[in-house]
Image (cartoon, rainbow, N blue to C red; front, side, top):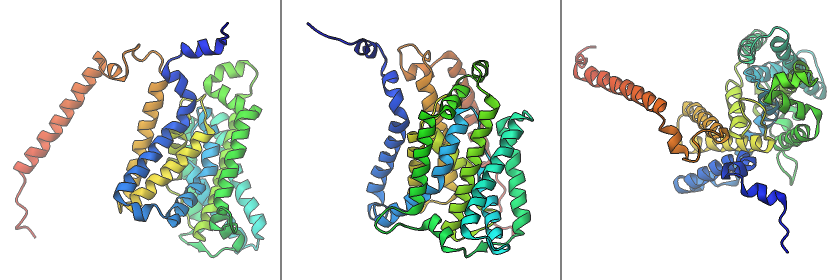
Length: 378
């Protein structure tokens, strides 16, 4: 007599995409990490695979871990925060002035940085929920506001030389254990995973991202929980500003210019949907590690700094496209990905792209043929 559970029958009827979906948040980034390791093992094995280099990677990743944890909640609710870099810089400057000009003890300055960041997050949340400004526009405008305040306060100065507590938070190490920033970053992810899976805040965040109208009808205060997410985001940006100040032992108004791109990229690469309703805290952690390893690999290969932004943008586009395709249940029946790319509508777009590329090549060729002779001009 055979005993077969209904779960087995249900699993047998599921497609391979459905079976893999719960694990893709970690499989995707880990596969890309493996590719980076293979490429670097071929091109630069001695320089890349050193303990000191991996220490640099983990310290760099730790700086983004708190923000990636909080951004996971924001994006899960169909939100976005483009002001995190400016918040980090401004909170770092406020903390520096509190210690240097007003004699604040380091512990109080640390609390001030995180609390100030949370206040800025509250302002972001109120702008979005009370004034009904879309998240993208609202946080982009507030990014300009916070960066402007940082420039006004700092007046072009670089504030440097902080107490040991601040530098320990940014680059210290517990003897015989992991670096302090890595411990802080991992702790924030543990707390974030607990909030996401075990608290009302996490469950409501997923419900709001899945369907805000339905969540409102079930009695969830959508605006209040969106504000909570932005307050958490601001607090973690303040913590990141503190960690950045300690890591560099300095802070200035133009610090952290690419924080928003890096954090959003890490969360999206980790499988959290930009369309809301799906969040993977472990995936966000893997995304942070992936981007730090990728940037470190570009530096190790002596590739120009500006290509790091190009690489991050490409990773975001490919990740969003990949996860969107996997979620689209009616994309092409059972004919596979290639069939979904060969629809009549897509064929017309390919023709348009071909025409534009051909026109561009014609202009380039004609430009070279009829270029003025500038060899004699001086």
